[in-house]
Image (tube, rainbow over all chains, first blue to last red; front, side, top):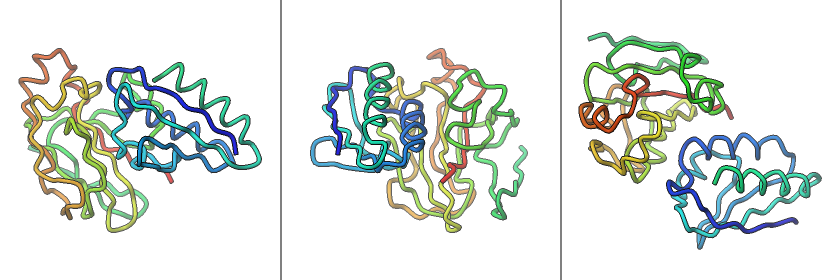
Length: 85
Length: 136
């Protein structure tokens, strides 16, 4: 299991556009990818699950990748968050 | 006013708004023009009533009421996203007609949009409503 935490810096939080790109990226990996924020946890591969979390600016999220390509997944996803959120 | 039906994977969807259809390829936002969220179409609306494209259930309503997720009775997931970057309006100009968990019918109003307010805020009026089929 590989994890990283990140604090959302984008003023609009995780809205449709970055959520869509995140879900698309997460979908390219074999590993199960989940995103956690406070008490809520959802699969990062499902758009409405991610959008439904309503993650706002300043929220701390933890992303967990579990599977064969988890290191690569975590690395690319962390880079994605830094660049987009 | 023109409404029309489109067939996708055997399901019939009604247009999410009355107006002129615009191909998503023409949109400047890549997430939509490159169909990252799935295939879909944009509509330049004639009026502010945005409707559900199919019978189903509301599975997501964004706080700013500019995007609605619908799971159709056929199992498709549709995203009706009103405008681009409209999240920045924080709900101003959007009056939701449904909430998360509601059952809806094709053609039932999801949201009333004050088109004047959106345009006054500088949001390009063109893709005011996108219906994307989310690829599973």
